[in-house]
Length: 336
Image (cartoon, rainbow, N blue to C red; front, side):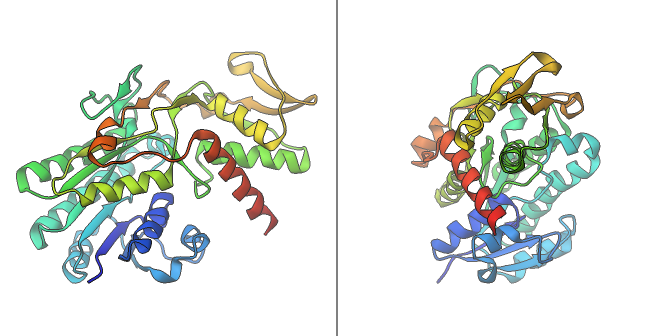
């Protein structure tokens, strides 16, 4: 018989790639989404899998609906990817963020405990929980959340550990570092950079405004990371895993790579809030103080030796491959 998986937040970047991955493994895939409208599942359509998946509309805080889905669908695995994923938005909507990212996780785990303890559960945790550290973070590193988003994710992480240890559930956390792809939303900095630079390349107009370009992140590809999610739930024993590439570059370095690949190599002028990027006497990028976060992570990188050893997981993309793929897909989408 086919395995059946439920993916909450299935219309997001990770949900779409995970759906594609599981379908290729022979799974039956169902998903939940807060909205079911034609333009909301554009990622699934782009991957040409939208007709292979049943999507259920659900309010993430509707405990009865979650319990009924678990009771009626004979699930083998649940991947909890739903929630609010914007760090900057979490400062504006902290209560909404906490409810969406924490209570939803609790309700799913409690429903699994009440209905079918054999269901394996994956919780999408975040490297933001670590805060800003000058070391490569692993599963034993201390947490220091700096945003409402990070606090909500840490709470869900701890709830998952609690249900694993106290209720004997197969519940695992994937502590994922930054992961990009052509399916990234427009509000994320990688997508914003590539869209802005390509727009300039086409019409030689407009200035891209960015916040802290010296923030360093550990960048990977979403396709690699959903593979790790799957591998966690294939283990006999659940656990927590850091998923990262271990390679750390700044937003500014990402911009430089993108400019080179697009063919608009210029030069940086000035410093601080007055720094800008010049190409053939035209300002392409400038710094906007309004885009800085109240508390920003300056440096973060991951140590995924546990995942490599226990899961036999390894990333297949480097940062230049990721950026190049995003550029090529963005070019194609603008032509069609």
